Structure formats: C-alpha cells, structure tokens
Image (cartoon, rainbow, N blue to C red):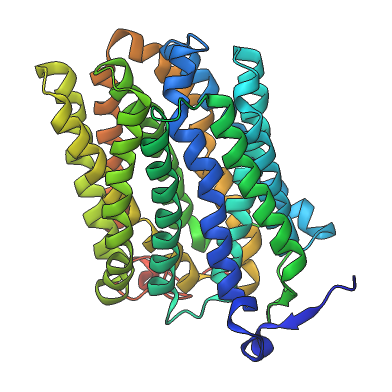
Length: 411
C-alpha cells in the first residue's frame, strides 16, 4: 500500500473523518482508554495484589517518569520517522504494554511493564503536542485544545463507567480489564496508521535539540508544572485507597464524577484562555492549586474526611485543565520551526523533577504525608510568581513582561 502525502493546506478537500483534526480527536480518545484504565486500577492492584507500600509506589512512578525525562530523544527519532507515524507507533506500544500489566504482579515485573508503557505514553504525548500546535491555527488553538481535552475526558469517562458497572457485577479480574483496554488502544492506533494520509505541515521542523533564551520562562513553568503534578498524580489517589480504604469501583466512581465535570468544563476553559489570555488563566490555576494542596495537608493534620478529599480531587483536576494555556503561550512566542524540538525539550524539562520526586517523597510520605502536600503548595506558589512574568499579549520578541526593557536575543 503506497503512502499518501497531503499538505495541510489541501487537507480540507478530504472527507471530514480523514482530516488532520479528525486524527487528533481519534488519538485523543484512543490514548485514555489504556492510560485511564491503568491509572484507575493501579493503586488497588499494587496494594491488593503486589503488596506495595508508599516507597514501592514512589519507585514505580519514578520509573514511569524516566521516559519523560528522555523525551528529548524524540528529536533523534524524527530524523528517521515522521512525527505522525511516531505518535501512532507510540500508542501501539502503550496499548500492548498496558494489556500485559497485570500478568506480572511483582515489583520487578511492574517496573518493566511500566517502563514500556511509559515510553509509549511519553513519546506519544511529546509528538502529539507538537502536531497539535503545528496543525491547529493560532486563532482557534485554545478552543480546539479545549474540545480535544473534552474528547479525551469523554473516552476516559466511558472507561470508568464500564469499570464501575461491571467490576463487581461480572467479577472482572485485573488481567481481563487491562487486556481489553490495552488491546483496544493498540487496535485503534493500528487502524489509524493505515486509514490516514501523512499530513505535510508548511514549516519543516528543526531536527536537533535547541535551547533558546527567549523560551526561558516557558522552560521554568514546565519544570514547576512537572514537579507539583507528580505529587498529585502519585499521592492523591494513593491517599484515597491507603487512608480511606476505597475499593476499585469507588475510586473509579470518583474518577468518573471528575471526568464528567472536566468534560463539560474543558471547552469553556479553552474559551476562557482565548478571552482572558494565558497570564490570567495560569495565575488562577496556580493560586487555586496552592489552596488545594494546603487543604490536602490539612486532611492529614486535622483528620478531615473523605468527602472533602474527593471534592479537592475534582477541583484539582479542573484547575489542571487550565494548563492548556501553557501550550498556547508557547505557540504564540515560538518560531514555527521550533515547535517539535522545543516540545521534546520542554517535555524532558517537565520530567526532571518527576524522576526523583516520587521515590524521594515516597520516603517522606512514610514519615509525614501532610508534608508532601505542603511541599506541593510551595511549588504552586512559585509557579504563580512565574506566571506574573507572562505579558498580556505574548508574541516573538514579547515573551515576558521584561522583554521590552532588553534587546531580544536571537537565541
């Protein structure tokens, strides 16, 4: 079968289902089926079957984030493989690795399968972000990113709903659910590989690692985002199982409620970014996250209950949805040829802290869970201060509020 190449400018002549935006939506809905299932079952699986403690779960998430740190390797891969192809191959790897996760319920087995699925997930996310920023016009990007986020949330919601309705009634096993979810993601990615033409963006991407001084604020925001995000991803859901004893269907029900709210909110968040700008949107996110993490710490210090913990979990996810403003901030200040290499570099920067924080904080968790969340609150405060440096109308040459006082550097 001969590969078909289509320029983005000519893609509107294709049927709606074969256009670039349709592919972005298909991938946005296929990826969460494997990843959301892995996440929903993980904490119960590692506690009930693999007998993990806080240190073990910390090490698992450290291993999971190593491919994110090495996402800069995408730059080397796209020398030989097109970004669109790499995105779909990465989805297949994610699906296959997820499918076999429950077959190896030991620390060594789970670390190996987690590493493989993580390579697929992080390489997909890196390339997908690049494709989104290349394929979506700047004037529509915030709204379209919001709708893509909603589509992913909708797919995740369906996964959670199926788990809640069938886990106990059908007596499902971890092996069965992981196999079905991972196999579905891999199958959809394989179909997309053959069903869609290769889309040619108008700006050839630089295929080498670049670090530009004018992107410094973007790099710093990515670093802080990765650091505090890991604390939430690793320990918020783990707390729900360890402290409050929630079962698989209860944890998944919480995830499902969270997804319904986020699915409805995501398009409005994209609209808010378009109307109010990246600076105000990110400031709101970081201020809200500071309060949420302080409240998480209060749950351990003052014995607040599971209802508050569940509400905070939902609010936390809503606030993180505002992070799409970080993508559009970069899209506005970037040279179009820098998008792919900078997406890879930024993804690696985002995961620097993610590699060592889960393992290190796993030990702190054994001593004081509240201290873990107070540390995250401090990180959110730092992010808020950095967001103050974003100008109201970012563009090349106006990357920060200080840009007008200095000569714009070439690099």
